[in-house]
Image (tube, rainbow, N blue to C red; front, side, top):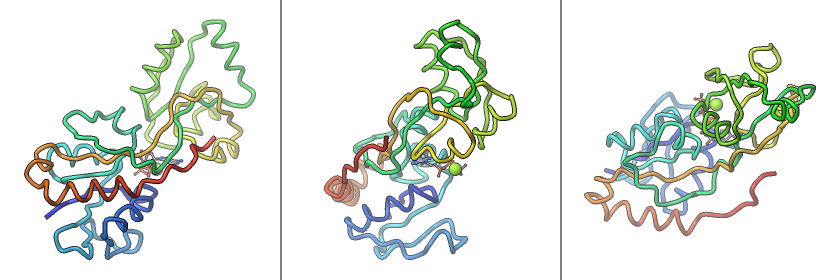
Length: 217
Ligand code: ATP
Ligand code: MG
């Protein structure tokens, strides 16, 4: 049995066509079912639904043989011990710094002001501002980052942006692009060896099915 860990939402949705290319069809819709283990048309393959940030943990410790997870999650939570054969080019977005439209970020940076930065991605934010020589107080949040600058909790946020419409709706502007993000296939090292005959064809099929849509701007 091969177990693939996916998170509900865009990663699940955007992985479906890749699975289809490998002849795998998930037999239940996670938005309709409460099941956490989903069967597929292939008796030897099942999908487990886990929180996005838990995918690397499941795969690292063998709760799943493979998984799909964002580069953001791999950097933030670590991808140690995981084989990462493919950038699947799905769930594309970027990690950016955003501030209130009326906040002069450039001059705050120029003057060497200490910035309050709210984010779920503290490791990425710490590394980014350290590399710029900007002093920051990081405030860890678990969601709705956009609210932080609007309420005075923070001067800036570090968050994922795709179309920019959420920022716009909250009168925030993107002032720095930290890195481009997409999702990777991750594989448990032991499973790769022990179940190679089942896993390698899957990697090959995914690899052939990857499309390179233009990176969103
Ligand atoms: P939860 O919603 O359970 O709190 P989460 O917010 O981490 O978890 P998602 O919002 O589904 O889960 O994000 C999962 C992954 O999808 C992220 O780690 C990232 O790689 C990618 N992602 C997040 N936001 C976007 C976006 N706006 N556009 C494209 N990909 C995104
Ligand atoms: Mg979410």
